[in-house]
Length: 119
Image (cartoon, rainbow, N blue to C red; front, top):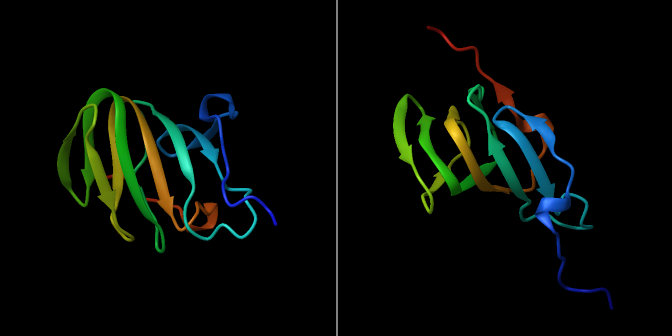
């Protein structure tokens, strides 16, 4: 019988670029995982607006302060703030932040769509 649990040390996963900054993505390579992935994400000041057609995300702020732009509204963010972002919601985090992001179903790069910003 295979193990019914998986462990990941988030701070040792190499970061990859994402619209928000840099993400360390755990559990994307777990066989038969159709539930979620977990990302340790460092938000940069130049995060880009984007949305997902299928994926729901939960952001949990660990460090920093800023805000989330979500469908044109500005939501304040500080440590221990949690936000659920449903499919279709155009969003971006603003500020220097470190978050845990839980994408459900698991993150799929083909379900990430950047939005041109109008000033």
